Length: 119
Image (cartoon, rainbow, N blue to C red; front, top):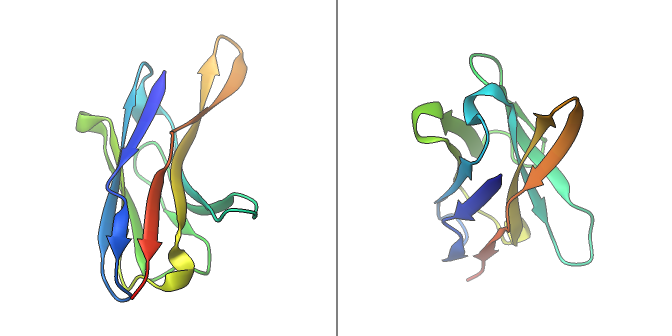
């Protein structure tokens, strides 16, 4: 069971980036997916959630209107389109899900991808 993020990098304020997260080892299409971020020294923050299939996405206020979460279940891939990036968006970004292993819930985290926004 694995999640692997990619797409991070160094960009300038106002730029855009698209993060990707590929899932393997579990039935990706069955589970809601999430994007989190963590600034060093601070707690990990939930940014966006997308249900397994059709349904509403949710965003934290700080990224609403700038970030878009989406998924392609045929490719087992989760995306985060980030527009109008700000220096305060600088963080390590993680994808996350909670899967069923027998009768127990099991959290799965990616390794993270660094996004740095600076002029």
